[in-house]
Image (cartoon, rainbow, N blue to C red; front, side, top):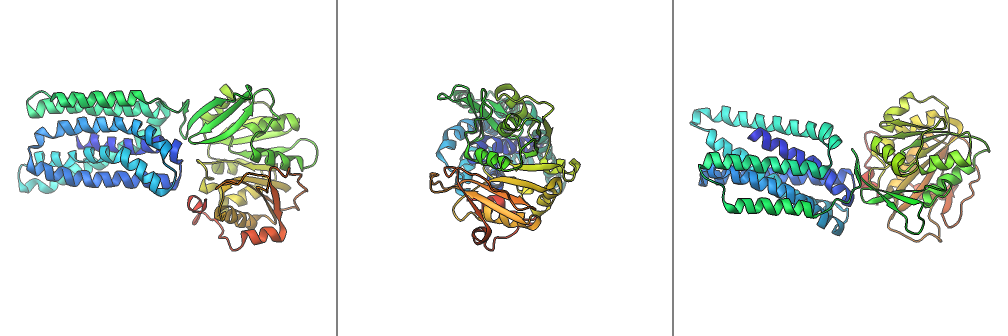
Length: 467
C-alpha cells in the first residue's frame, strides 16, 4: 500500500509539469514550484494522517483515502485547464496553480502511510523495523514512480490518459480495501465522488493536438492565409509555415535570420540549426540558396513527425536532421564545418541553460569556419539582463559581436526577440528592414552589455535573468 501510493504521488508530480507547461512554461521556476508544492502536500498529509489514525480506526480510513486521492487526481486536470489561462508565469502564479491542483491529492495519498503504520505496529518492540520498512517501501515506490513516468509512461500515452488510469487504479484499490478492512459496503457518497471526478476530467477537452516528450503541441490553420500553419508549443506560438511558399517568413526574428544569411557571400551555405521547431528557415534556405546543406539538431523526434505530417517538411540530401540533445551532438560535428549556425532552441520562452554557457559557445566557435557567423535568437526585455549576459558570454569566444533589437517601428512589448550575432571575422553589412529592428555594434553595444556576468556551466541562471 505504501509502495503504491508513494509511487503514484511521484507519477502525479512529474505529470504536473506536463499539465501546467502550456500555461506557465517549462523552466526551473516551474519545476521548483511543483516540487515544493508536492513536498508540502506530502509533509502535511503525513502529519495529518498520523494524527487522525490515532483518533479513529485506520481500517475505516484507508479505503476512503485511496478513493479520495483518485478523485482529486482526476480533478487536477480540469482545475489546471480552468485556472491555467487565468494565471501568469511568475513564481507566485506557478505555486498558486500547482497548489490548487496538486496539493490535496499529494496530501491525501501521503496520509495513508501513517495509517498503515498504525495497523502494522503490534508492539513497541517492532517500532523500528515497521517504521523503517515502511519508509523504505515508500522511497522505493517513489523511485519506481519517477523512473516509470519519466522514461516510459510519457512516451507511450497522453498525460490525461495516464492520470485517468492513475485515478482509476486508486479508486478501484480504495473500493477493495474499504470493503475488506471495514467489513462493509462503501458509502453512496464515495460513488458520488467517483462520478463527479470522472465527469469533470471528461468535460474539459485537451488543448493539445499532440503530446510529445517535451511539449503540448498543436497546429492551427491561418484563416487569413489558408496555406499558413502556426505551430504552438505549450503556451507560445513557436513557428509559422506557408505550405505553398517556403520563402514567406512571418516571424520578425525569422526574417532577421534570413537577413544574416543574405549578408554572406552568394552561393550555397553550410548551415547548422540548433533546434528545428517548425523548420521554417531550413525550408527557406533550400529555396533561396540552392545547393546549401542544412543540418538540424532537434531533441524532440515528435516535432519532426508533426512537421512532416502538417508543416510540409521533407528530408532530402540538402536537409538532414539529427535527433538528440544539441550539446551532445556537437562532439561529432567537424571543425570548421559550417558557414552559419542558427541558435533557435527554446524550453518554453527561454534558451535551455546548457546551450548558453562559455563551454558550449566554445564548441560553436570550433565548428564554425573562421569567417562564419553564429546567430542566436533570445527572448528578453526590460533591462535585458539575460541578453546582456549572453553577449558577454559570446565575447569570450568571438572577437566581433552585434545585436538586433526592436526599433521605433516595432510595437513595444514586455519581452521581445533579440538577435545576437558573433563571429571571429568582422561582421558583414546586414541589410535590416527598420520595421524589424536596428543593429547595435561597437561602443553602443559595449555600453548595452556593460558589466554583465559571463554564463558558465557552474553559473547560468537563465530563467532568473530573463524578463
